[in-house]
Image 1: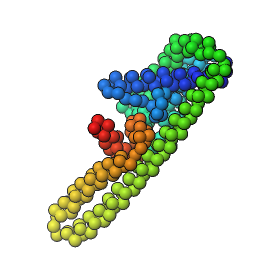
Image 2: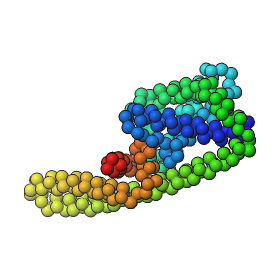
Image 3: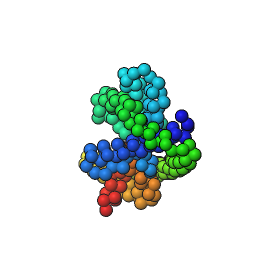
Length: 264
């Protein structure tokens, strides 16, 4: 077994994973849903999982050991990937919060069981055909294909990471602008409330106007941020399920505005 062959398996399984994810999510939502955080038609987490399944579980004694190894291994891989990508980019690409027996929305028991079964399918059902595809290819051509796929994959990763970082910079700037103007509006509200204690309705009216002001500023900053985003940044935003923490509300608004923009 050569490293180039393993890398080709990784790419092919990543493509199969993208096909599965895109088909499943598109059918579920009844609209086209191009899954995966990268631009190309591949989901690397499936490629990593399948290759590890072949390399590690192929040495195990039976299907039960394969099932439980894949179930636990997929949970570790999903949780780690979710945690790292969220820490780096503040975005979430899958969320199991509505699924029973989940841990922080990153993993859940039903999906881990499903991936355990998928490990059996890959090892005993799909991989023999994968070997038939790659075995006839001479090593020289495998090396050329691996280099080509590696160059495309590396460029895709670099472009996507750059887009996500630039997008976070825009989101941070937008949130700072909103927070600053809301703070100024709040100070004005306090001053007005102090000056109008004799009129009980005036502070309430000011509070309502401040909420309306915040809503208006969120919409304006969403439109402004969207107008400055590149295609790659829009693709990165569209690929995520949601944002968490300080970008959560603005991220939801941007994704909604982006969906309207796409339909137009």
